[in-house]
Image 1 (cartoon, rainbow, N blue to C red):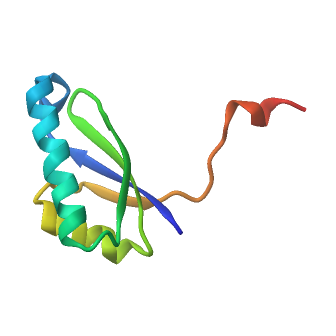
Image 2: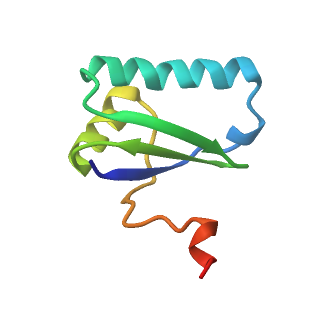
Length: 91
């Protein structure tokens, strides 16, 4: 199944408290539940003003639906075409 990265521009998100990040995570999980688990959140990375979420879903339309259901903004949705692991550099 395809993987996607959702880029979310949210000013100050990198400074959320542990309680605030837990609440945001729960809100995303609740959205997955409401969609009958048609999408799966793998992980989210918080930067200064951005969140990068990795999801598994059958298609980009399902990701857009998750964005709508969760209420979190999406600046960009990109399908992951390949992953380069550090071991790739080994001959």
